[in-house]
Image 1 (cartoon, one colour):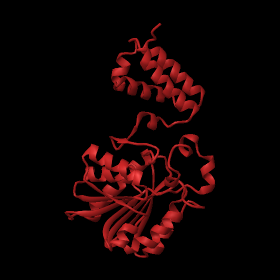
Image 2 (cartoon, one colour):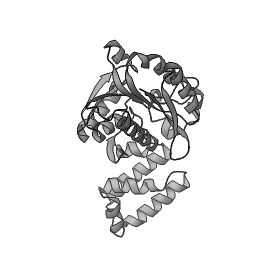
Image 3 (cartoon, rainbow, N blue to C red):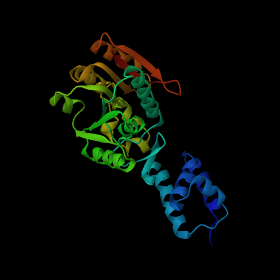
Image 4 (cartoon, one colour):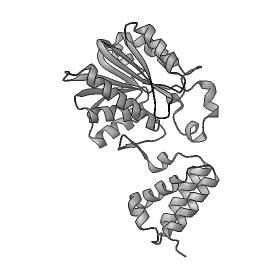
Length: 287
């Protein structure tokens, strides 16, 4: 017996819902296995589904439900700012909130540096390269460098930059140390550092804690360890006119803003809220 596409899709959606997973995962995985767009899939719902495809699809559904494998790892990619970024276990899966950070950076660059031809922008803890690659593609006037302590993450970021045609330089190192060692001054530092308090790691969803790199999640005892390091290291690498942009965990905005105000008493420091009304970005403008 050959099942029709809609029969398999209906069953999988219901199965996912019963197990507390998002129903739309069924559609994403089926499009992936059939190599169809969503529109093409919906137009072919009454077509028979090859048994080999059905078995591969079901294997992925079971992995997602029983082993909590992220759907992005099953697909091999996630979309960010309208572009497809490859992901694996060595990098954090790009989140929609981080798109808002990127937009905030692009907006602030436009009014802080209205006449600049080339600006040195550093993405610290680049992971998949989503921030660095997007900034480079959205504003070709930026000279973007991405830093990560993970060599595996840098390899993935470099693959994404090459696939998407972005001109990004890569440095292997711990936070801002590669810049400090080179006595290099830059215009913009942006980072989505680890900010989850260590006590909260065990309570994270298995999809996150079992498959995403812990070093990209854990931010010390209170989640602020990396921001404290930034506050110490940033004065060593920033030019007189500069922009600092951080993503933060919900509820951390004021604490991170205070650290930046201590480091740069004359800076304009602002906490920005994401589309869900959570404090998610902190910006410091030095001029």
